[in-house]
Amino acid sequence: MLFGIVAAAQFGWAVILYTRPRRRLMRSAALGNALVASGWLIGHTVGLPFAPGDVETIGVLGLLATLDETFLILSSALLPAVLTQGTRGDRRRYEYAAIGLCVLSLTAVMLAGGHH
Image 1 (cartoon, rainbow, N blue to C red):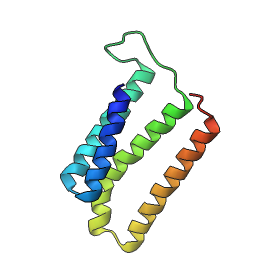
Image 2 (image 1 turned 30 degrees about the vertical axis):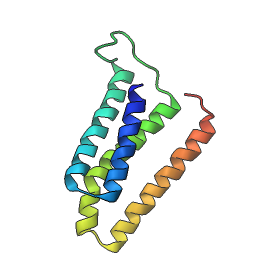
Image 3 (image 1 turned 90 degrees about the vertical axis):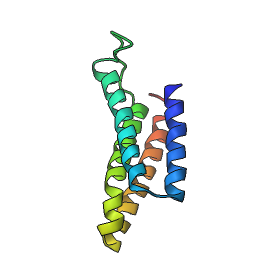
């Protein structure tokens, strides 16, 4: 349920960012995604405080999702600088990295076959 809400919020964030890009929105997105990734990391290493003793196993899909979250954090933090101070080549490399991550993530999900 929680991650469904997070997914909806991330989708909304992407739509708003696409239509009205703002630095403040990028910073809040980086912070929100960092909280999600931190929650996953804590839940899979020491356990969440409201579920004592329950440390979840690390699955392929969860790990991939967290790597994607990390990319979102870095993207949210770095994109304003790339857009305002970077060259056309910097922007192109940034776009290639994003496309590459999407392809790798989708490939890994297909190879995992739903096992996590």
